[in-house]
Image 1: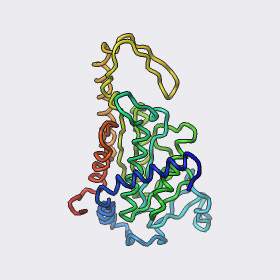
Image 2: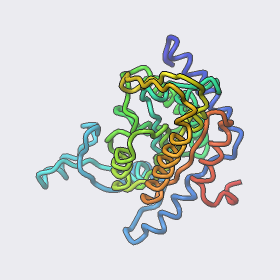
Image 3: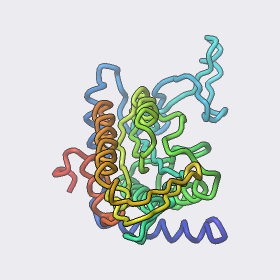
Length: 302
């Protein structure tokens, strides 16, 4: 267990997330994996569950551990290859939470920062996945897939490290993800849509099953301010002074709605799941949405 305030906070957050996850039935990603196994049957996919069984070779990517290189296979060509096992390919759920400065914000309408809600949902989902026998990993350098009860605290510590480190990008990193795995992304996704599409398209090319959970403060959608307001950009430290916010509210709402619809269209076009969660809503609402999305045949998962 990590010592110090950050370690204690991650431990408390993990316990809270586990309690939240326990309020729903175990999340069985296996339902989707079985369907995928049938769809990929022509490729001779092996039986799921053999953790050490060889699945495939793939090119070495930035972020891969050197110990995973298969030197015999690499010697046959001018490229470097790593080994993937069936366990990695079929049972790994990759999780990512936006650690950029824009997530460390809340309006006076709510008591929860977007980053706090993203972390809670990520850990709650982790608790559900672990209860269902899945393996999880954060999408970050040095993070490995883990299973078992201790994995929840390990993910919580990894999340705390990400928050304590330098300001991260607001989009998923260019790191290797196991093919045919599942990825769940938590963030506000307020970057320009062209940047969002480029980042998500990299995941679609793996291929990997992805669900995007956009987390917003209610003030970001409603712009409920009055009169003369100075807005500060948490990303680049820029400021904008608006003499009368009421005069721009309608135009702002239209532009924000276009951004949300554009994000939804990007996800639909890539075959990704998509949902928006407001921080004034109960976290159970978002967790249930993830449950339904990740387990399409929810009636069979009682």
